[in-house]
Length: 280
Image (cartoon, rainbow, N blue to C red; front, top):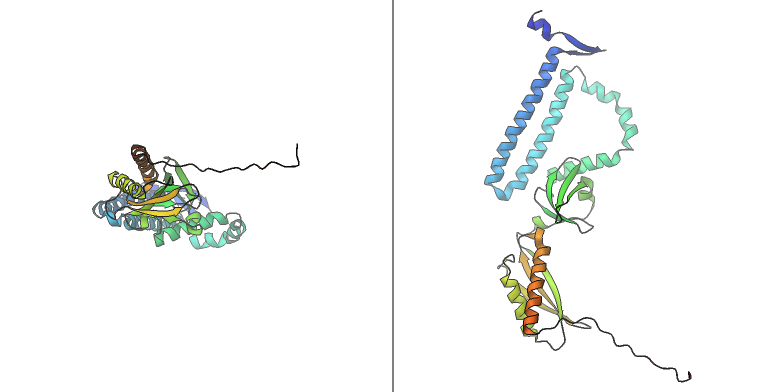
């Protein structure tokens, strides 16, 4: 048997679909070139990401879209190579797709949302986002149906893409590099308000994780029921760890208040008990 005859050898036949040795070889070659080509494209995009850090999210989104398009084209080519007519196949399963579409409509919603995310680029790799339930996480993967977040507790959270499109999401990374936060504190009536302001500003300036520009500032918010209410505002670049920064700031404020004798009051209530004159 010659090589040509071996390549034309039929392995499986069903109707008009005929699978021969050469068709299998072509399929393997296409898959090999696809994997190698995607790795080369990925390395090229990684090079762009390394040199242009500010545009890393845009490059990565373009790569993901390109990868999905390439795989769709490859799958169509493989089907055609195997003797499967894609147009005939789609026509034959149309009724089936309509029937099961109602049962998997959420799946299609997630897939469509994934395409929206990739094209609009409202959500990108390494973005710090806050979900509607208050969960804060870093985007580590954007898939076609689901995406992955790494929370502050180092938990990997898998979220359907439709949630990013339909729910209200706060994206801290699409704001300025410096994001403003604040810490509230109350002091006892009679405290030196100027001293309190100075302590709050000093604690903010001494924290290395708080940006020096814009400068932190203090706001005297209100005369509360049990305390004079202050709020220190500051800017940070590490928004993912801002709760740790707030904790550090509270520790420093508490130490300085103890040092200067500034008291943090607790709510108090006066209860007046009236006796019944007619009761013996």
